[in-house]
Length: 404
Ligand SMILES: [Zn+2]
Image (tube, rainbow, N blue to C red; front, side, top):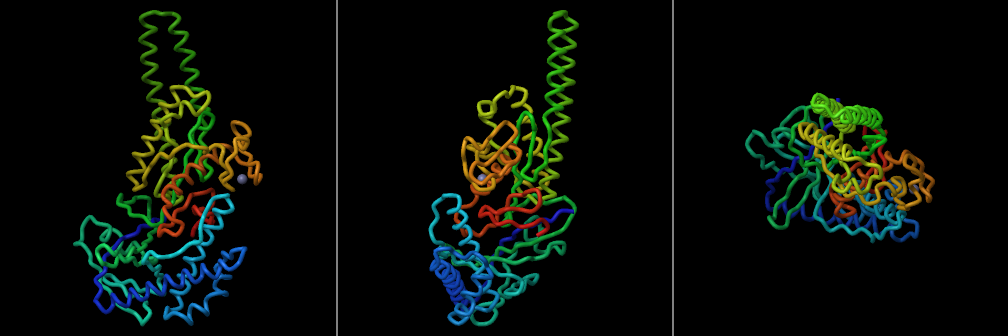
């Protein structure tokens, strides 16, 4: 059983008086987010704990706004996550400035909003308003597949105002538990990445700590080359035909082996609720990996294609990311040092002492790279995760145990 999360974007039909009310609510909500950040910024050691920030700001925000309790908490959570993101960047020696919220949006949960089949009831600064969904006709659209589907449960939503068209949209999060047979459409706010590192000793290693040894494949290749060498030395017509037959058989065998591994990688992605799989860029890999043979680049390319094909059928996107420093960067603290890579197999961070299999550390960095690539602002709407052995890590370093 896999948990599937999908976001459906729904246009709202809002009356003029309710429009004014929603704008007022957004203004107060953004004010609350910024108030929490300002409060935290008074301290040299910025508090990031939601409980601590709650104790410091809740009463003030309730007093100075007309926001209902759940929206005050929602604003505080949003601010807490942004503060944590900045602190995390500082810890990694990166530049980051104080968060400031201006994007007109509000995060609603099931207490501050009620989701019906064709409309939503939203909490505002003056009671609740109802807004009709503007839905397309039933058919092959996300609204039919997720929103009108009883298998999917609504988890919450983000209200967004688009200035260009003067309209309100609701990004509704939905969730389902089902067999791994996923529709291919995806506009995902909740995105989880599986990182995959390719190599000679370890053919593939995932950020979830699964290893597929390259030993078997390397052994078969060496055997094949030895026999082929012997046959070539005989130089007869029949030896030449034998080489060709062997070559075909060997290719089929290797392809079959790669098919099985690709299937297991996609299963790993499904098991961890990933909607993306990240590989390092295959172009130029021959220059980066010492001891690599033409055979390996061929095998990597095949494996990637098989994964991409199988993942696509499951609604999972497969991409390649830039390879810079994935083997030298510490996946735990972010420090990048050449000395971190102790040997071919061992990674040891000179700064924080983190030790791991070098390819496993690289797989996590590959996943991270895709996460960061998608992270446009520290408090952008999307939540992106990297799938780990147990649980997930956000780009800001927040850890959630498995099953959340
Ligand atoms: Zn480290």
